[in-house]
Amino acid sequence: MPSTENRDQPLFKSKLGLILTCLGSVVGTGNIWRYPRIVANNSGNEGGLVFLILWALGLWVWSIPIKLVEFAMGRYTKKNVIASFKELVGPWAQWMGAWVICVSLLIGGYYSVVLGWCFYYCIHSMAFPLPESYAESVERWEELNDTYYPLLCHTIGAVLAGFCIVRGVKTVEWANKILVPVLLLIVAFSLAWSLSLPYAYEGIVYLFSPDWDVLKTSQVWVDAVTQNAWDTGTAGGTMVAYATYMSHKDGVVSIGTFTPLANNFVSFCCGIMIFCNVFSALELEGRSRQYIVNVLKDNGPANTGLTFIWMPLLYKDITFGRGLATLFFLSLSFAGFSSLIGIFELQAVTLENMGLRRIPAAIIVTIVIFLLGLPSSLNLNILANQDASWGFGLIPSGLLFCTLVMYYGPNRFRRVLVNEFGTDDFKLRKIWNYFIAFISPLIGVAIVIWWIANNISDDSRWYQLEETSLLLTLIQWIILLILVLNINHIYQRFFGKSNLRADEDTIQDGSIEVGQPKSSQKEEYLATTRLLPKKEETSEL
Image 1 (cartoon, rainbow, N blue to C red):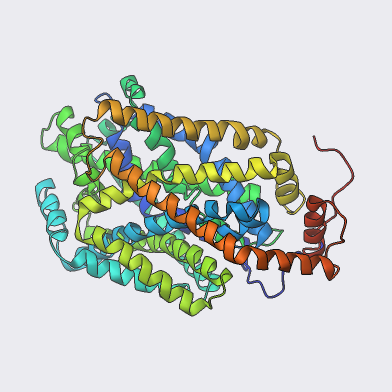
Image 2 (cartoon, helix red, strand yellow; image 1 turned 90 degrees about the horizontal axis):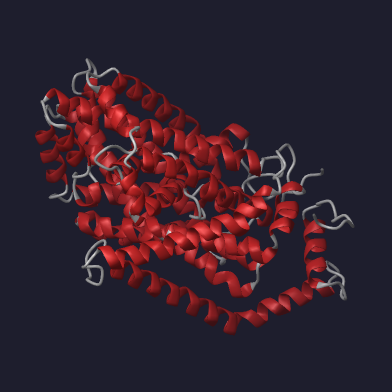
């Protein structure tokens, strides 16, 4: 197949750079900070195996099918999320892309705060001795959040991320070639060391023991899918932005499957590492199993401090413990930083497609994300609220991607955007049609409904404006939905006609022949501009 790319479009220089950049975007604080605390919160008194099973299933029925959509649409349209929804569905669907963009933006606000914690612990581990006990480690965590250091570190993270996206994909690819391998090596070492600790096997036994009663709670189902979405970046739109730098030779199926699998493997290793460390430290103190389980679930609002309290304790008995702790938090900072860059890049590409130059776009994104993260940097309860609201907000975003495929046609999407457009890749099989059109949407809708119903029945305070209450989450969702719908309506009313005239000019100048069916015009035009093979006159399966 001839080249399909615009010569001026920047591309990844190598497949290794592409893979490491995609891994850098998803491997980070979600694996080491969020995953262990989500596992702990959803483990019963007997163990956490039930959550692990649901989490593994969620990868195959939710994350991978939708991740393939993101990669395919970005590589094909070479546009941001909003413009991709417009091209593949129609102008009326731009609000769907706007929802995805806004959810990612809101996640970026508090994600920058979490990254700031990583910066702080990196410097603190370098300058001061590691804590000698659980109580001392908790005290340090609480002291951090009683100061303005989270605000300072959040500011540094946002400014650095804004600076990095000024030059685009070239800097991102180069950085990830260094940062991601270093992080993976340190995680591997930390896992091996944690497994060698006294009583580490108690943590493994607990982690892999089932407590079937947790199946009755909606939260374990919700968190299994939400953690997959948050951890892999599914439906966040970041991969749509990165995929615009992919060529037709970069496989959507291979990379879109490998990236979430590799990411979840890293999360799994981090979960084992944390549980072994916690059980080892507290078993040596003579604590009971129930006490240890309670400690795992009680490390600040929404268990936000689990990793930052326990990882320093993991390294305290190692000869070069401070150096390793510093290197660990440095690598975690790098991995989280690369993920934050992905969020920044998504927003910058969107502003660029709206007509802004890259530097002004980078400045605007930096200011907005700084302001969004400001409340979370000053109050952990606000961060817990943002994580509960917008971490779960990725589920509606995923449903919108499913809607796009169903509207476009699952078989047509698979054929045109994936199998015919790409080379050097596996073929996307027909079974994907059933997942993206039936199974994934059904799971997403069922989880949202069950989550709402169980919150109302189980939480007597669901209607109060508390940090993780159902009502506060729904209010934020409704505000965002009204906002994007109205903006889309205003845009269509005042700018829709000019876009229509531009489309008519495209037809009149010969790019598309007048008289062809609209779908044929579209595919013929895309085939011409991208030098794609024309659609064969065969019926779809």
